[in-house]
Image (cartoon, rainbow, N blue to C red):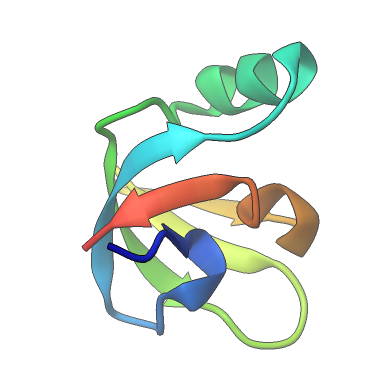
Length: 74
């Protein structure tokens, strides 16, 4: 099965975080934002610029580099 990152989802698609591929600081930063393994979210915007997510009713903007480190499942 091919691994999908957060960048592969289109607006209005939902996903769940499967794995985060990053160092300690990346994992800590995402944990503080509520993006933990198993967290369910919906993509609001994913074109040029940051990826905007709806996570538990809150909107989060992530840079594309950080979003590429988040592996998801639909």
